[in-house]
Image 1 (cartoon, rainbow, N blue to C red):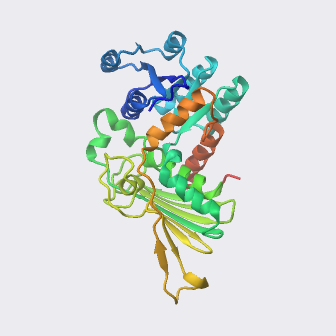
Image 2 (cartoon, helix red, strand yellow):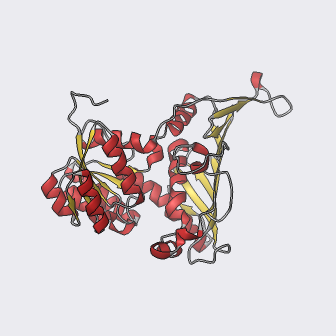
Image 3 (tube, rainbow, N blue to C red):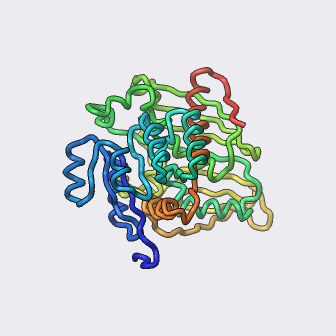
Amino acid sequence: MRNENITPARIVVAGAGLIGRAHIERIVAEPQATLAGIVDISPATEQHAAALGVPYSADLEALLREAKPDGVIIALPNQAHFTAGMAAIKARVAVLMEKPVCETVAQALELADAADAETVPVLVGHHRRHSAIIRHAKQILTSGRLGHLIAVNALCWWRKPDSYFEGPNVWRRQPGGGPVLINLIHAIDDLRNLCGEIESVQALTSNQTRGFQVEDTAAVLLRFANGALGTLTLSDAAPSPWSWELTSGENPAYPRTQQPCYFLAGSQASLSLPQLELWHHPNEGHWFTPIESRPNPTPDEDPLANQIRHFCDVATRRAQPLLDARGGAKTLHATLAVLESASTGNPVRLL
C-alpha cells in the first residue's frame, strides 16, 4: 500500500537484460517507486519502454539530465559499471549498482571516493543482504545463541544448461565469465555479512569438466578476522540439490529442494541455512549425548522487492545504503582473491 505521506522515488533502470527486467517488474509493482525511464541499446527495450509509458534512451547521461530521477539502477555489463556509476554521481543521482560493484577494487574505491565527495549514496546490489532468511540468521548469530563462531561450510553446486554458454552468451566461457565472479561472489558476500570480515583466502580452481578458459569448479579456504575458519566449494557443472538458489525458495525460477547449503558451527550450537535449524546439546551435553534441533521459521519474502523498497529510501535520502560501495569493494576484493590464489598457488591476505 502506498504511503500517502511519502512521495514515490523516481527510478531509472540502465540495462534491460535479465536482472534489469527483474528490477523493472518490481519498481512497477512497488507503491513507493515510480519507473522514470529505461536505458539500453536494444530496439526491443525501446518497445518495452513505450508499452510501459516511460522514457527510453540509449544514452544514460542524456536520460539522467532529462528525467531528473531520484535514483538509477545500473544493471549494465560489468565493464560499464564504473563509467555509468561515475556519470550518475556527477549528476548527483543515487545509485543501485548491480554486483560486482566494479571490475577492479581500485575502480570500486575510486567510485566510493567520488560518491563521498559528492554526498551521493551508492547501494551495491548484493540482494541477499535483503533476504529475510539471512536477516534472521544474523540475528541468531548476534544473539550469542551459537556461542563464538568456530567454522562455516558453504555449498554452491548446480549444473547450468549448455545453452547458458552458447550464442550471445559465449562470453561466459572466457575470463571474467566464470562462476567465481558470476555466482560465488554472492556466497562470499553472505559469509562476510554473517561471519565478519575475511582475513585471508586460499583457493584451487578447475576447468576439467567443461574445458573452457574459465573455471567450472572451485574450492576455497577462508580465515575470518574473528578466528573462525571456513570452507566454500563451487561447481556449476555438478547436478546437486545444494545451492542457495535451489534451497532458499526465494526465486521461483528454481525448483526448491528443501535441503540445507550453509552450515555455521559455534561453541554452543550450530545453524543450518536456509532452514534456520538450530542444533544443540541440552544441559551442556556433548557428542555422546543426544543432540536436538529447532527450526526458526521465516516469512516468505522477495529479497529483490525488499531491495527496491530500501533503495527508494536511499534514493530519497531517508536511509543509508545497507551495503555501500566500500562494502561492495570488500566483497569484490575477497572474490578476486579466489582467482588470484588459484592462479599463484599462494594464500592472499586481505587484512
